[in-house]
Image (cartoon, rainbow, N blue to C red; front, side, top):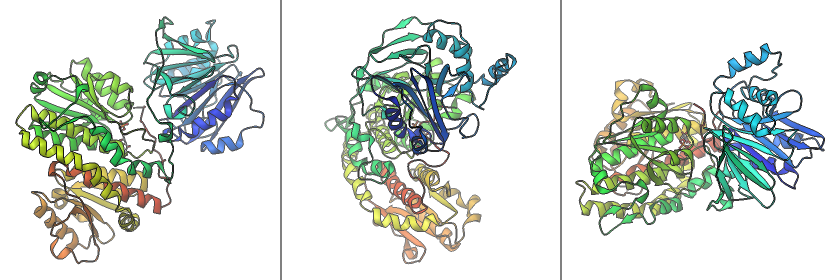
Length: 610
Ligand code: F6R
């Protein structure tokens, strides 16, 4: 959420910053800006709109070899030219870009106003620029440290100051920041995507750390300016994974990467001999594993819905009570933390603030938390006692697809291991391993149905409002399907348990309100088909996501009933194969409606503010 990039070296900063901002647009895209520093002082360009609007409007002479840039997702004040970052002190001394929220901004604004300071924007960040400019410290690091001592809240910041033209000072508290090391040039960014074409040698700042970055190196400090020993390491990533390549959007690319991503998360983790999973990173020995009496899964949005699928897997395979809860709610109800509960935090980015704060709350109360996280070295991954990395590769589209699939597989591995130290037989363990091994190819088979799914999506796109329904294993699938659909098509899509339809929502069913029904071949098929008849009797159009051989009776030949068939696997693993076609439905509906697939309105990747 919001993106920061910075450069200091021998090249002109502006083109590097613009390119970096373009690669950060999924983090926020309502306005963008740059500041560069040269002998002639600070130059700032910023405006509402996309990064390309900023690039088109940059003045010809925008020279400077030190610079910072920002792409914004508005929190304080609307998206307009004035509220765009960078923010300054009004005298051309300081320029600041900021991700996060300053909680005591209102009080600080009053204090500054009382001192005669004229604040021009609605943002919290402008306060920080003034505090830095007014600091009496004689180094930029000292000024930043002094200003940060006065603020409460979360931040990732990058600061330029005319009196210190050789450096950028950055700081982190709750919003990610990395320093990238080049050849006599250095970079800073909120996300590796912004600088990956220049360097993959990076240092991750910890919360409470400040770094001073010049063309030849960097030094890190605690907020009281005592030094911290931090060195950069090489991240194992292919820079081309940050390009959409032949695809029209990152979402499409990422959906089609799912078979390969699924293979990666399973690789080396399946033990056919003992019918279990190897998960060394969990840091749980078999005795600790057996002592677990309950599993509590925490995530937000799609990660929460896949967490519900994961809870189902744990209950079915390990017979341990398990449930999932929105991490954003958990912390606020003073949760009871039990010593024999395994808490599982699930997050693609590893930066979602609600999930991170939930992890911190659990650990503060002495609970054990493991993470299912995609981004290696991210805040949640570092905060947990152990975990399973998801190896989905970088996910750029706001709508999560391949990371979500790998989360499901991560849960399947966890449930298998928990099950195999309990009552899950070796035969059942091997049955699931065989099922997991078949999944990547079966996901490919679903993706191969894209043309047919596009046609179905075309019809759904015309509906203002639709239902997604499922039962037990199918219910979180319906929730995720509705989430993906509403996120990028902006249609009202509501998920319901099929069994609950007649307790209320059936009143809404009519010829203009379609239902996407999840009807796997399982112990509930007959009941699900019964509910489909109730919908059809009220002339509700139906899309049935099902397995070959499921008998829909006389619904089969009715107009207004469309069938999507996914391959069968072991029934416990059904949810993920039922989810993949729903991604394609959402994608093609949004495409037909002409929406920006990767940057849905009002949303941004990685929600780092509460
Ligand atoms: C939906 C989506 C969001 C995220 C949620 C959690 O497609 O992308 O709902 O799933 O914001 O993000 P992470 O997984 O990064 O914690």
